[in-house]
Length: 308
Ligand SMILES: Cc1cc2nc3c(=O)[nH]c(=O)nc-3n(C[C@H](O)[C@H](O)[C@H](O)COP(=O)(O)OP(=O)(O)OC[C@H]3O[C@@H](n4cnc5c(N)ncnc54)[C@H](O)[C@@H]3O)c2cc1C
Picture (cartoon, rainbow, N blue to C red):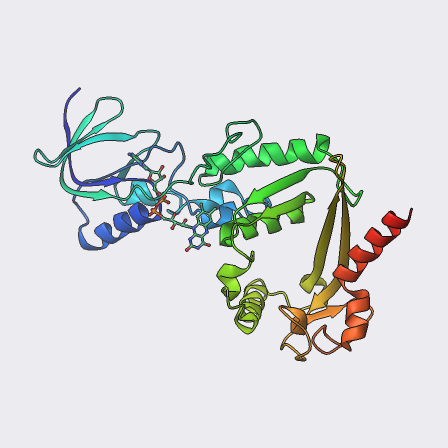
């Protein structure tokens, strides 16, 4: 196989390589550019994978980093499904996984990150997924369809399909929100003390966290109450010595308002107005709030079950 020579070799098909190709073309209209990615897809934006793409609100074709025709128009060559397996900097050349050698004047290594596999017993069982690539997202779409059709019934008795999301960062919480939106029952398993540690910090600065929520609602033009529905959930689990476990889920539905009101509550309480009331959880009399809260609902169900 002949050695190919390019002026710019970009290894990796993510945002970094895409931005580099665009920038190169702003400064050098002629120099040959080759972008090599091991993925089978054209370079794409990842952020939508856990959100709009996962919820099927955005099409695959809308994720690409380059508008249609841009690469051809700007004479940027793309090799998909090819891994750069060896780089010899002394000879200024790279070897692709099909044996092709590419020599270069300039090299960018933009191979990005990977999902960190969970190295624990059972992590190789079926139905365990990670999310980093478009192909991962498509595998999840397939699994979601199967879960909604054939999965276990929800603990609340509405619909089918349960998923456990492991992680407490932006991606895990975004995914958990998307799965809930799609109708799955979600258990979010978090290593930190709080799933919102990234949002509010361990010091629980909820003013900051509420501003972030409000900012995201505004970004989505969510101003009318129907677009600002929210609920608190509390689950109590009781395990009997014979291994029998029962869960009791309490829930309170409401609407998010802005600006926050009242200083009696905790967390997101000052921006949450429960259904049937006009005051926020931060304004309501604490006794009343505690009687209608998700925690009270869960405890009521637990007590009733224990009395049966
Ligand atoms: C689901 C999800 C949601 C995200 N949301 C956000 C967000 O909201 N805001 C935000 O700022 N960031 C977000 N990120 C992170 C953001 O996508 C990354 O920071 C960004 O993708 C980094 O771009 P990159 O080009 O450096 O690397 P990557 O996007 O990782 O791209 C690297 C590419 O190189 C390829 N590659 C690796 N090795 C080789 C090789 N040897 N040969 C050829 N190709 C190779 C990889 O397969 C990959 O395609 C999110 C990430 C994910 C997965």
